[in-house]
Image (cartoon, rainbow, N blue to C red):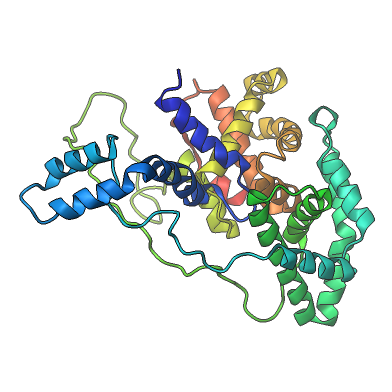
Length: 381
């Protein structure tokens, strides 16, 4: 029999189908109203008028609080109720998205000459290759399919930057429209899906504009939530155990500066700060999963046993690229950035190697569980 956990998992599995404009922190904007609240609304619809009438009759009287809720629950015939006049059936629709506009933008993009049909086909032939046939050379093949379009865009950007930026805007418009409409319309046109995937990866490689506004914000920057929560209370007391040694005076002060270890949960913050990305805890989980997969490799485990950390990283790097290719469909944003940005790849590789080495050599003294060297992460060395 289905229980609470079954339905909770069923709701969150919808996240696997969301893509396009939705990132993991935005899933709740869809799942909460369209699955949970909508279902409640359907369950309460038959008794809605009765609950509304009962609420109007009792409102302002002697019955209030929990006693009023119980009366309204009985009227609804459920353990919950809704006495708000608002519901999904009476909600007013705003401006609807016109699917024809998406096709019009596609036509303009196709006619621009920035990319060719054969390049899109060549890229998608590799991208949609069955997993058993994927190889470590696939990312090179996909890049070779994208590079001609990147070169044409760069030439156009030098000749007419405004025209090039207008084209870039159309690419983003197509991605947003298709990413949204594909959630609600069962498209049978595979060309749309192939173009969407091609343009998403192409956008990451296009050269940034050299003049005008450097940053664009889709939404206002604002504080939406603030929570002050007491987690625990207690006393801090000295305990028996090993104490950190006291360093003697130096020429810069009373002791050497100690590098602060970085908790794993904060590593994404380091990457975001360095590269201006907006990766989150879901992306952190993706990195952790790759580290766990690498640790299962017998050759890597042997390398951790007989090598120091810097030599171990060389072995780890050879394995890491294959692991990224195998999981490219799980987090395409990170995959594209990792394959195309050498400095990003260096820092991520350094951290993942250090974390795998720490776990495999957990008995080694000197590195606390769950932390890595901050200086090494920031410099990638």
